[in-house]
Every structure is written in structure tokens, then in C-alpha cells.
Image (tube, rainbow, N blue to C red; front, side, top):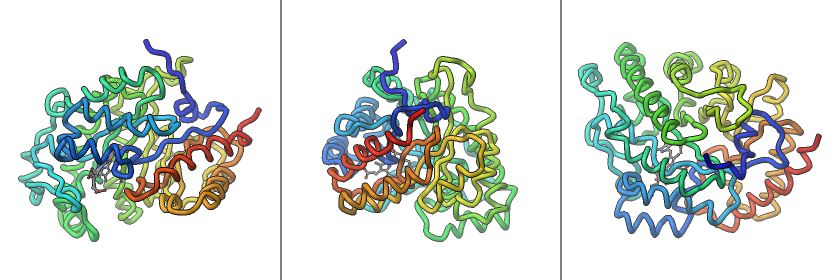
Amino acid sequence: MTILKNDRYLRALRCLPVDYTPIWMMRQAGRYLPEYRQLRTKAGDFMTLCRTPELACEATLQPLRRFDLDAAIIFSDILTIPDAMGLGLHFEAGEGPKFEHTINTIADIEKLPIPDPSELLNYVLEAIRLTRRELDGKVPLIGFSGSPWTLATYMIEGGSSKTFTKIKKMMYCNPKALHLLLNKLAHAVALYLNAQIEAGAQSIMIFDTWGGILSHHCYQEFSLSYMQQILTELKRGQKNSHNLTDYIPVTLFTKGGGLWLESIIQTGCDAIGVDWTVDLSHIMARGKQIAVQGNLDPAVLYADKQTIDWQVLQTLTEFGCHNGHIFNLGHGIHQDIPIEHVQFLIESVHQQSQRFHHD
Ligand code: CP3
């Protein structure tokens, strides 16, 4: 067994003391890095990059060579599951994801297979195994999936959407059909995440990027309840073990879910991811321990160093002198952020957070 050299991220997820606040960034591997753009050109297209374990491993490691990040996230995409269900995913330059087949009727949903991850998604598992070997305990590796609701938006809309008209129409006109789809997706996600854990993922993150477009009732019924179902099916291991790596903590991130934090915490997740609309001091004021990931506005990284420093300090101050903070952006990093600003952000978090951690 390899020894984990930097365990700050896993310690923070368990609300244990650390010497400074760990940081990783959503979409830390990606187009703001010239070496990523080069790798993507070499691969030809984004899905080939995802489907080739050596290339996915390389993309995962690129940001860690440049920056002192406290966690790695496996390079892949949330849309691998709908792709494995046969919807035919492709990415058109500058247009985002597109599916060849979309879901329109209950018959389409009944036909959908629940993919065996060791077959059609084995490339992700292989990438995880390879990346764990390459990391050699440098930092923990995060596995991930989209939430059933968020995956369903892409499957029904056929790609990205601004209005989510089709899925909302199904939700209000044919809720039974949508529940059938969400149920299938929840099973598929649970199988997939358990396979990622078995392959070596040391923590799990569920991206509910579009939960925030729902009314509060619909959020509970169509998004949160399925994430809850996944949590009950995950093989997370022994929480009370002294060995940090015997337990797989789970982070739930609903973008725009700031008003529902209490019910998200009730699911039994280990950490909540929050976007920049949330005042972290409000979460801390509730008293009960839960780890929190977030929540700098990614656009802060356009600003000068003084502004970045100040915004970091503000975030750290809101969280206060508690255990359980994982610094992150409130959503993925933008592709035109200067690399020096990322470098500066990470140094600023590590340096300024030290005085928030003392016994
Ligand atoms: O965070 C990481 O570094 C790991 C890799 C990762 C990617 N996508 C790589 C990627 C992760 C965790 C994701 C998750 C993902 N994918 C989400 C949830 C998180 C979020 O951002 O809300 C969503 C909604 C998707 C779906 C998706 N994939 C979209 C909408 C797009 C196109 C948008 C865009 O920025 O062009 C992608 C493509 C994608 N996934 C890219 C990367 C690096 C860009 C593809 C490219 O190289 O052109």
C-alpha cells in the first residue's frame, strides 16, 4: 500500500485539524493550460482524450506538475454515463456536448440499458488505476459523476440548455417517465462510482450542476432524493477507522443550491460544495460539523494579485477558525484565466490560511 504524502484534503473532509487549508479547483485540468491544449490537439478530440487511459492520466497530472494542489481529480466527463447508455456523445468545437439520440418518450427510457462499468466505462477505471500508480501517494485522487438530474437534463435537452424547457415539460406533464429515468440513472451512477472506488478513487464528488434551476419542492423530489439514493448504495467503508484511506468521503455540489444546504446535509454526505452566492459563516453558525468545499467566484481570477489575496482572505475569514474547509472555486475555472493568477491563488490560500489553523 502506498503512503499518502499529503493527506490535508482527506483530513479536511473528515473535519480533522490541518496545518493549512487544502485547495483544488474544479476543472483544474483544462483549456487554460497550454499543455492541455496541446494534449487535446494530439488526441484529436475530447472524447478520445477521455477514452485513452494514458492521455486521461496525463491530463489529470498536468495541473499537479505546475501547482501545489492538494488533490487530483480524474480527467473524464460527467457525460460518460449517457454515452455508455448508447446516446452517442460528441463535442463540437466551441459548441459543447451534443447527443446523437435524445430521450423523448417513456419508450426511450424503458429501452435504456444500465451500463456495466467494467465493460463500457472500463476506460475510466483504467485511467484511475494508472493515475493512482503515477501519483504514488503524492495527493489523493477524486472520482466523480454527474447527479441523475443533471445527467437527465443533457439526455433530454440533447446538450446544454439555457431554458431547460424539454425536461421541465416532462417533469410537469409526465413525472412518472422522468422518475423512471432518474431511477435508472441513480442505479447507473451508484454502480459507476462503486467501480471507481474499487479502481482506486479516494473520495467522490457528485456534480449537480443544474439542480439550482428547480423550485425547492422539485429539487427535493427530482434531484436531491436521487443523490440520497446513490449515497445509500455507495460502498464508502469504515468512517471510524484510524486509517484515513479506509473511508471514501462524498461531496455533493448543487450549483445554486445555497438555500437548501440543510436538506443537502441531511443526506449524510461528508461535505457540501457551495458556489459563491453562499456566505460560509452562515453554514458555520449552524454548529454541527460538516466539511465545506468552496467558494471563490472563478471570475476573481481575472483580477490582480491584491484583489485575489483580499478575496481569499474574505473567504477564509467567513469560514473562520474551524476544521473542515476545502478551498475551491464556486464553479469550474474559466478557460482564459492567466496561469500566474492560479499559481498565486494557491500560494495565497496556503499562506494566508495558516493562521486560521492553530490549536
Ligand atoms: O475538473 C477536472 O479537471 C476534471 C475533468 C472534468 C471535465 N468535465 C473535463 C472537461 C470534470 C469534473 C467535468 C464535469 C462536467 N462536465 C460537468 C460538471 C461540472 C460543471 O462544470 O458544472 C458538466 C456539466 C460537464 C459537461 C460538459 N463537458 C460541458 C457542458 C462541456 C463543454 C463546456 C465547455 O467548457 O466547453 C464539457 C467538456 C469538457 N469537460 C471540457 C473539459 C476539460 C472541455 C473540452 C475541451 O477540451 O474542449
